[in-house]
Figure 1 (cartoon, rainbow, N blue to C red):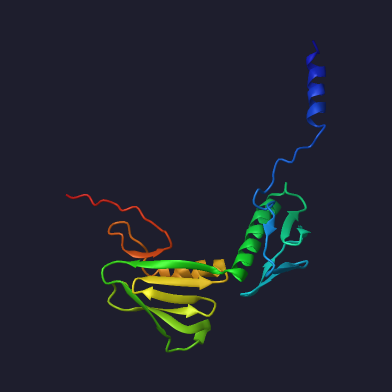
Figure 2: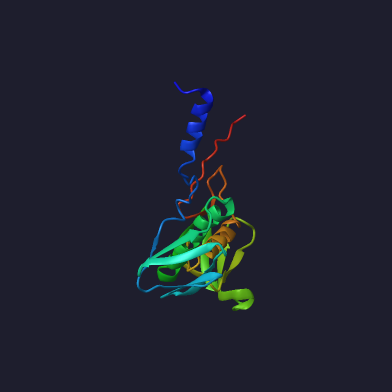
Length: 213
């Protein structure tokens, strides 16, 4: 039987013989497949994504490297995944590039639903035209207030109103689409007592019961 000191030394020698990478981004290491209609052009500071719906770019950190192991596949790696910032930005940047590819090929769409007695919306021409970055249209909504709510539609957003209680928003930028959807929702956030408000996508809320005295 080995003495305690020799046993500890042998265990240390064995445990340090191979270095195991403890941290890795499971999202960042996944390769990205892209169609032939999309071209990716990386530089030292960003990667440009060009597709049928337009062109956009995603910033790259100095410690990131883009590679193309196949004609339709892209990978992204970082210098040291053990560094917390690099590991976090690795997955984030990979997601942003993937969203940019989807946005330039298919675009993003989200429905909004107006739930409430008398809640209505129409899409009309904005009397201000394309001032302040608008596309010349605005949402005219009845949301239970004593006044109408007017929301100009930005130039990068496409809005449709198929029914008086439904809005369909489309955009090539997922982030900008989410920001404008949240802005519209903010004019009448869903409330938990009667279930009224503007709901985004499949959003659901838990209805609270009112205790009677």
